[in-house]
Length: 326
Ligand code: PMV
Image (cartoon, rainbow, N blue to C red; front, side):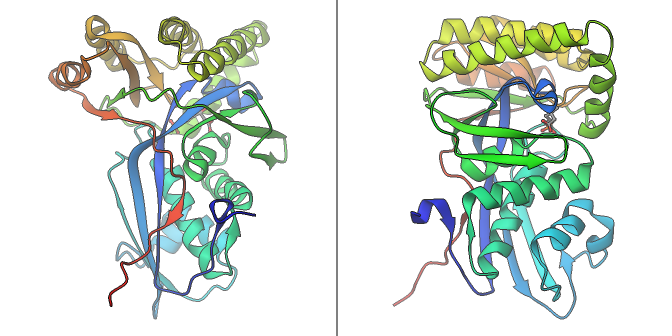
C-alpha cells in the first residue's frame, strides 16, 4: 500500500486537515442508491488534537455530550477513551451544504487514526461515514468520501475500479475517481441554514409517492450523464445537465425562494447553476461563463449571498506535519 493510501502513525500532538465538498449531480437520489458526483473544494477544515486532563472541543468541555459529531467521533474513532483536547479551524460555512461536518469528522478521524497506529484511506472513508451517519441518523457517504479522497468522486457510477466501497445496514456505495477537468466553480451560501436530516427525510417521503421511482430514475440518468460529461471536460453538456438536475430538485421539493433568487441572479453570468447539497436553503453551485468568475462572485454577493470561487482540492484528508527545525 502506498503512503497516499494510508494515514501514517503519529503520536500526539497531531494535526490533520480535510476539504469541504460541493455536489454537482445526484444529491438526495444518492441516499436511495442512485449515482452522485461530488468534488472536494479548496475550503478546508484543520484539527489539532492532543492529550489533556479533560476532553474539550474548541474549549467547550461539554462538546463530548452536546456536539453529536464530536460525541460519535469519540465513540467510533477513539476506543482508548482518554481525554483529548481538540481545536478546529475552518473556512467552510456551517449548515451551508458545503460539507463542513464531513470535513470535520474526516480530519478528526484521520488525526485519531494516526494516533492509533495509522489507518488505511479506505477504512478512514468507512469510519468518517459512520461518524457522520451516527450523528445525523441519515445520509450517504458522498460528503465524507470526497473529504477523505479529495478530487472528483462518483458514487455508484463512474469509470474504472472503485477506490473503495462504503457499507451501511441498508446498502453499499461504490466510490470511484473521476478525472478533474480543472474548472473553476462558484459556490454561494444563501444565508438560509437548513438541517440536512430534515431535507433527506422530506425527500424520502416524496420518493415513496407513486411517481417516486420514475423521479429517481431521472436523477440517476442525469447523474450518470453528468459524471461522463465532467470526466471528458464537456462544459456545454455539463451545463445542460446541471439545469436538468435543478429541475429535478425543484420537483423533489427542496428548492427555496432565496435559492431561486440566487439562481436567477447568477443566470446572466453562469453557464448553469443549481442547488448543491440538501437544499431547502443552503448553497448553490454555478459554472461561470469563462473569464467571468470574479463577476459572478460579485453578482452573487450583491444578491445577498456569501460566494466563493473554488477549485477542486486534489488532496484528501491528510496529516499536517509541523515544519522541522534544524
Ligand atoms: O447539504 P449537505 O452538505 O449536508 O449534503 C447533503 C447531500 C444529501 O444527498 C442530500 C444527503 C447525503 O447524505 O447524501
